[in-house]
Amino acid sequence: QVQLVESGGGLVQPGGSLRLSCATSGFTFSNYAMSWYRQVPGKERELVASISSAGGTTTYPTSVKGRFTCSRDNAKNTVYLQMNNLVPEDTAVYYCNTRIRGVIYWGRGTQVTVSS
Image (cartoon, rainbow, N blue to C red; front, top):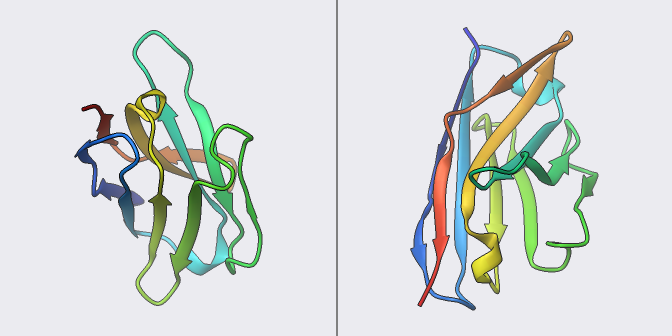
């Protein structure tokens, strides 16, 4: 079955960096776009990055553009989110996501906390 497993979260000081990974299995990874979302308790999930199936196209909201970079390794069935210059407002649980034949799949998430 489809599995998405995020890793790489943790506690980081403001201005620091983290690299999240999302390892996938159960589907032909190279055929599907992937996305990263984040969620703070009491708020809706927010899209923070999307990447096309071949990795040639990425999109970001204004809130993270220039600080976050999404990439993928189709040989490793893994998508990444490099986060630089982190600020406390980036604190959230980060999830990877894909949609396969109309069904949306989520990982369990990884906690990112930005605090001094």
